[in-house]
Image (cartoon, rainbow, N blue to C red; front, side, top):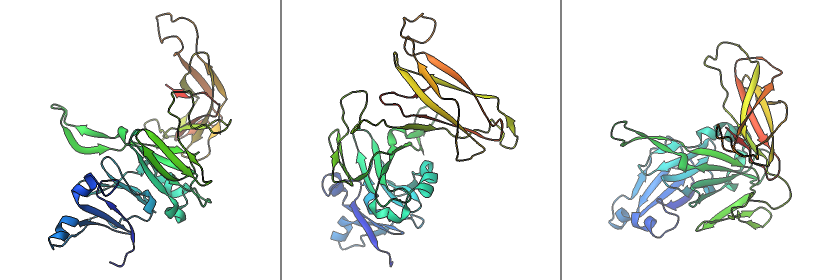
Length: 318
């Protein structure tokens, strides 16, 4: 068809052995199409090539192709997709679409590296951001959050499936991944190899004294009607801190779908260390509610962002 073959992988297998060999099918990705090669049919002298109805979608990021639980995930300029076992293609990167198209250097798709970590049920994709010529972060898809709709009475599963959750790792300059049992390894652009420490300690991934910045951005709300301008008097956020530790959060507000978040008053939360009264939350797990004044009160949409950059502290919003 005139298209270049970008990558060929066994059908739903990480190697040419085991389940991949038993299926006897090779998936061939081209820039704008996907083909299956049935080895058993080829051995019989039959037509062994089958083209998938992918609506013109192919793979232009060869390193992104990884076999996961329910299919093979791959990427191209338009986003991240999955070839399912029923030979249909679904868009799994919908919740990352804005970041993918606005912040990722799509001219460097060949540098992306995908990985499936079975122990944590996560697909990781290293990406170079705009203006960068090597991966500096990772998009992480947790498929344990996927769900299938149920038929209410008999609890049977229907075909509809909800997407899992996406996270960004900003401290992962990975150009390659691998895992052995529960251990995961990452090779970086500096020729180093890292592994996350699975020790049950307070913090992981530490290689220096710097804290890791955690950011939670919530969806914009129109309070039930997007056509009416509202008068916002204040913002109330509920936090929960660990006993004996002071958690410092920076809460910001964006209005009317703007990208710039205006910082509200900085706040700190410290949980009680005393004995529970038996009338509410257990000691050390009490909820603290903080009321923030806002500088811009008239708006159509309101959107919150909470971030924590303190070392060895968590951020829990209740």
